[in-house]
Image (cartoon, rainbow, N blue to C red; front, side, top):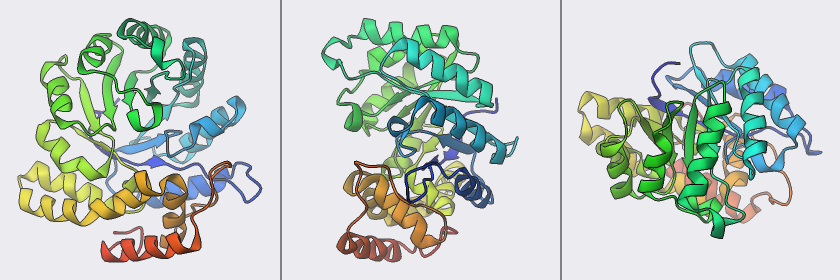
Length: 299
């Protein structure tokens, strides 16, 4: 697998109006976005509504995505489940479908019992059984559990665990992990809202919802930073902050899908109980995109 660096969008899963999978539209989105210098795609992350799909649908989505993702681009597959057994099963299914690595969100339903020992044991068991490398996924806003730097570093000691996607936004903790992790361990920012600060602490890239609708902006921040053109990167970082918030913590997956529809990709509906963006909020969303200069997915 190529180095885990650069920008990857966590691709939304396409559904028809009746809620069934619409793999052809997902494949169209992949091909359109592949015109940009993206490292690859995350399939069935949080923006892919992993928790909304049946076991059979998850496997079908992995296979459909791999058909459309070029061999020179990575396919990461979200495989985190609440039990270790289910996570191992889904991770193996992702490997069979051709995923290059699995992104594993930590179990959190019984969060009071998710001690460091339990979490390390979970991840190491998954990594032992997996035929593909494993990436840790820390997303406290969804799980209600923010793994500590110490726990993440203990998990990362496994030879088949290669990186971390951190959506918590704690840059001090991110820097501590980067500074103490084993050689070659990669840390990816989980939001475009703090992409440039994360790169400055040593992150190797980002898995960014905004990269679905503004791939050129996200890639430009990464490229400018690598060139040492920090002022140029900072201008774009400031420009995208409000738009990024709108399609993440403010209105979430339905807003991201609405933005994709508005910009010429296929967003479609989210699965219930998620509700579509209201007409009022949709108008606000369009204005936010326009203010950021995002008037097509080409920006």
